[in-house]
Length: 247
Image (cartoon, rainbow, N blue to C red; front, side, top):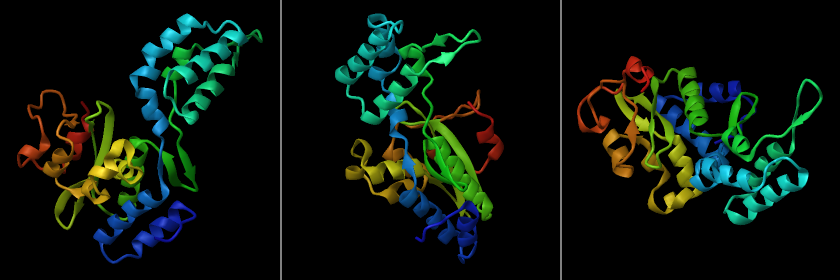
């Protein structure tokens, strides 16, 4: 796939293709070749480095002095398996104070720094370059809609008990799931996924295939909807009002 300098250039290329199947294949290729996942946010969700651990660090090393704050950072680095990227983000937000109306410095607690961690989302001329599942799904949906491919964003919970999203796309009068985030996980061999799956096993698959890959995945149904798994019946998937209703 060629390189693109802007969203418009990518859309023009997709529109030059002769079929929607080619278009969705190239959309997926764009993500596999150009988009990075912000794995630091998954680290942030990990129990050892989130709320309970952060509160423990705050109890040991209150943020009342520079020495104490540096000890807290050293403790996190030496007492957990955090990546350098994750630790550097914590360091930046923990050591840099905000200034109140009287000019005084206010330092956040370690709990607040970790609890308020934001995803590293990178874009270049309208092209997504880095993000998390919701950014990946949203941008894929934007590309599909730009070339006339019908799609719906599906929201749910992955087997890792985290909020997740993927696409239900209509191609050749058939509706299939496209989990581009898990395709990226597989590309990167995140948690060994690259050893167990191929990228295409998350792309253009039926709900039953998705649940075969990840049996404990849950779709967030509207309240009162008495159905456990979408793949166990003939319910039409393409129901925008259904998915937009939320959990």
